Length: 116
Image 1 (spheres, helix red, strand yellow):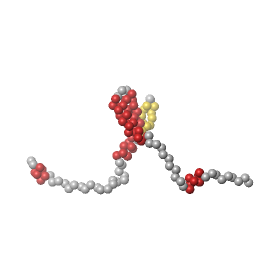
Image 2: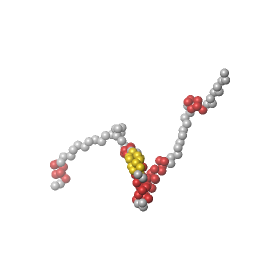
Image 3: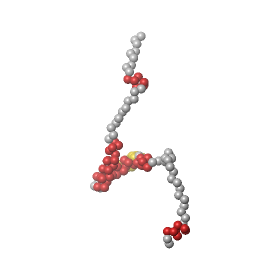
């Protein structure tokens, strides 16, 4: 059977047009989904004590346990996590003070109380 015969037996459906423009605001981005899942709390038992920690902490603890036991793959994954996390955690803290009437009044010396 040739391609032409297939085309005659199975007519193609009209293609739907792709939506132009931004997605709906309610739709989560992939990064938002990952963040939500990794930061969700879960219960674990650690040294006989039940604790509630994030999924990311649980994954990291499990990788540490495996790495200490000699699992080279877990060690490599931990190093990769550290590389990914370092730029986010080592960003210098920046504080900006904005001049306004409010901040200037806070900086002004307090008037002396009159002795009456």
